[in-house]
Structures are given as structure tokens and as C-alpha cells.
Image (cartoon, each protein chain N blue to C red):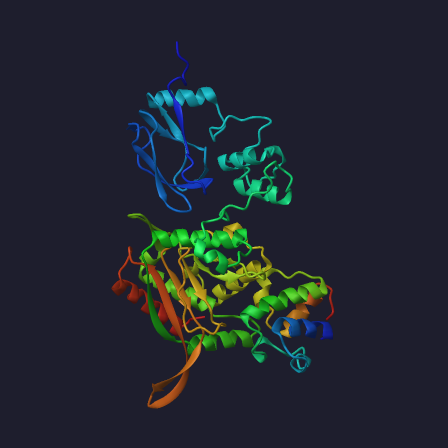
Length: 80
Length: 396
């Protein structure tokens, strides 16, 4: 994953630089206490704005891991 | 010889109060074809503030032209009064009018009475005002005036409800006036106040173990599905409704209405901080995981500010969660045409003695706000206990 995606996490979840740097493709919501059902909505909007994509509202629930987000971006032709 | 319509007169929705351009027809007090007297109540309509009776303006046979539950603008047709049902039928055939009863005009846009009055006050040509729906409403004219300060000779008028109320003179030097509520916030405040005025609200609280709900949420998070408490509380509310259907009822005065479906709303905020109550349909037919996915879908729609109108209507009750805020419990206010709201505060750990050992267990306090006009505290406490049991034993 690239730093643009890490920046999305840092902004939406209000993470410090060290915490954001530890995020990788294996990270899931369960690994980050700040990744809650509330901050998840901000994260999705942040990713959409950053990469110029739009996720379906119905798929948002399943985007609770970095790998799922990467896969959803990839399906839209975006490599993050 | 007289024409068929000489003695038939329309009965239209009057301006019940200054704030409402529209009313909802709650119910008829007379049946179609009933002979009515002048002043006899023919129906009840719901405004944002109260339920009002509409009386017959003349003597004759009343033939309704609107359906119960229908939203009607001031000036819309409620029905006709004529010397006989046949005379009214002949009048309707002869007029072959548009179903609303308004005389169609090629150059006059359809507008509510409030819109027409406001446009006249400001000298605005209604043909220039874009309608947000099937007709131009007062709010449309207000938006037009706000966007076009020079649209009328009177200049822009403050949005509905922001008119100044009298400030007690001794307070004047102590306070500074702030910008008024925006239309959404004002709408929420107005409807909550109107609903509270209709209810006899009482509250009950109960503590619930949340260890199993927390485990369920954690299991979903492990599987990459971000989940919060609302779904579990919605499921608990549905269990309470199943045990006591009066929770899914509401009063209009002494009349009681009960929702047919277990559709439950939850409070959610948009990215701009606006409060909405999207509705999860058929909760009693969905498993907890399905409810959680639907909550996520609706929450995203709210957060984007794109919640469809159809996703906000018809809930039998509401739940409210403040789990991520530092509050032990909170009292929810019932939404319009509902009598109950189930609220949940933040999680906390308490030490419980279990099997001879002290354990730290996540707990939360549930608060049920209900209408004491529909059930008493004894009955409501049983409902709340059912909700507690359901949230303590979630079944994914």
C-alpha cells in the first residue's frame, strides 16, 4: 500500500505518524481501536476523495480491512 | 333551469395556522354520503403542532375527495357538499376537472396558498420560482428570495420559524443574537417539539451486560466488517416490539394507530453534523448480521448527505446510541408519529461476581422513553427487560 492511503487513515482516524506508518496490507479494523463504525465513514469518504472513486453504500460494511479497500480500489482500476 | 353545480360547493383545506402550508388528513369523522350540518366536524388534520378539526361550511351531502393519511396543501380539495350524492357526482362529471379540484391554468404555476401569499408580499412572480416537488411551496419562495435578494420589493424574508420572538427586555443587554438555526436543524427541533407536545413521555432505565455484544462486534471486525452497537440495539428493540406491540403504536389524541411492520429507525449524523433517522425495514425478518450491514449502508448514505426520503419514513420506533461519547446514559426524544425510543449510552466496565469469581464485564445502560398514555411503567418495564435480554444474548 502507498503513503496516500496511509494518509487517508491518518486523517480519518486521527492517527499520529508512527501509528499510520505501521498500517500495512494486513491491517484490519480489529487491529486499530480508532477504526470504529463512526470513523469508518470518514475513512471511506477520505479514500474516495483521494483516489477519485466512489464505493457503493452497500459495500461499505465489508471494507473493514486494508486488503478489502485495496481490492475495491483495484476493481476500479486504482493501485494504492 | 339551474346547472348541475349550482348547489355544490367544494370543501378545501383551510389555513389552520400560520406555520403550516400542508396538513395530513388523519381521518374522516363522517362517512361518504353523510348529510352534514354547518359546523359539523367532518375530519381531523394533523399540522406540525396539533391535530385540528375541520368543519362543514354548509349543509348537504358530503362526498370526500381525499384519502386518510394523504398530505394536502392549504387550498387542496377535501371533498364537496351538495344537495345529494347524485348532484355532487353530476357536478364532478360536468366539471371534468383535474383531480385536485383546482382549475387548471396554462400560465399559473401550481403553488400552495402559503407560497402564493409570500410571493405576493414580496412581489415575486411565481413563474420564476423553481418548485422542489409537484407544486411550489412556501420554502421554495423563501429559497428563491434568499438567493435573489432583489427578487421582490420587500427584500429577503427570514426563513419560516426564524421570525423574532419577544426577548425579555432585561435580557437584551446580557445576550448577543446568533445566526438562526438552518432549515434542517429547525425542522428537527420543530418536529421533536410537536411530538413531545402530543405525548406523555416517561423514561425507564436498565443496566445490561454487553460482553456478548462486544464479542459479536469484535468477531465482525476480525472478519473485516466494521460494526457498532446500533444494529444490536435495533434487534433488541424489535424483540421488545414483538413482546409488546404497543411500542409500535402512537396516539393522536385518544385514537391509537399501530404500525404493521417492524421497521426501526436509528439516529445517525451526516458529515456536516446533521441528524437523521434512517429506517431499517423488516427487522423481525432479518438476522443480526443483516441488520448490521443495512445499518452500515444507511449510515454511509446519511454521512454523504444522500439519504433518500423513502429511507426516513414509517418507522414504528427509534433507537439512539451514544456509545462513543462519555455519557453513561441519555434520554432519547421520540420521533414524529412514534411513541417510543430506546437509547444506549457508552460502554463501561463493572466488576461482577460470577461463579464465585470477580470479573470485569462491559455494561451499558438502556433507557426507554415511552408514552404513558399507551402503557404504564409496569408494562413498559417488561418491554425494557425484553430488550435487555435480547441485547445480552445477541444471535448473529
